[in-house]
Image (cartoon, rainbow, N blue to C red; front, side, top):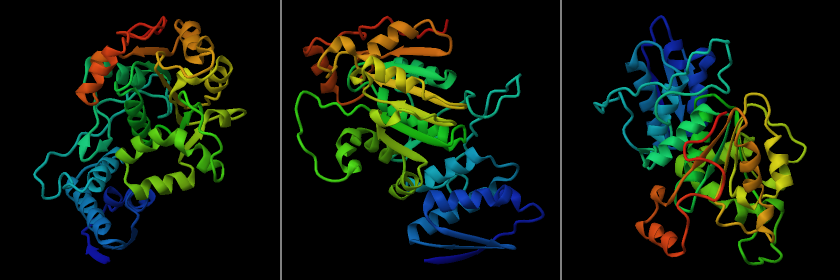
Length: 347
């Protein structure tokens, strides 16, 4: 489908199209459409649904008035991708508040700064947010620290919220890429030889991270980001020797990393990067549970400045209500067996 729209852009077309047509590029990447502005006319072509969504975003930007931030455009794109009405375009909804940066007395760059307000990330048209006090503290730790350890039993949202926070950091231009990592450790069984290339072999181990991402992004955007390297999903062993700058780096299932692997992973952090480490110390699948890098890191780093620990409990379980009862039946502890406190430490 091709659609030509006349826009009374007025004396300041940058307000709608963005500096150097930034908003146009976001539309192309986010919705997979071709957008060509020329004078007071914008031509959009592509699948009908995506073309209509792009039209809604552009009309909302035109209606907005005043300055428009990148976060505003990303918020509109998230609404458009979810299939719902775009705020400010015939929906009667209030315009969403932009995600603002905290002022820095030292003139820091955007990377590494905390954000204000909720996550600009949606699943099924609903904004992703904390649902328990423990999850609220977890997100606050991620917001304000460069390295966060999130520990707790299954179903507490530790991985899902970490992925959502990483996507938010990418969408608000605080990082340039996402690196999602997992140890390739089998949970109590041997899968044997797996056919295919390296990507096919590690795919089963990384599937939970992909599931979370597909919840938060449309398929087209996900595939483009994976192909271009904006989003990278890799086994932990592939991290050796790398330095990751301006990236949101998430290590999931960290209880199955060894002490040496954990040290290797944590030292991959480069300039402008943020790290989130998640794991459940009660589900260690290593031959020697005492060798868990997560337990060792909690002991070594609990007093290191800039590192926060968030301990989620069975009270924070947000999956099916039966999951909480299953955890209780298996004798799951209220808090992980680590020296971390519920409110974290930043000594």
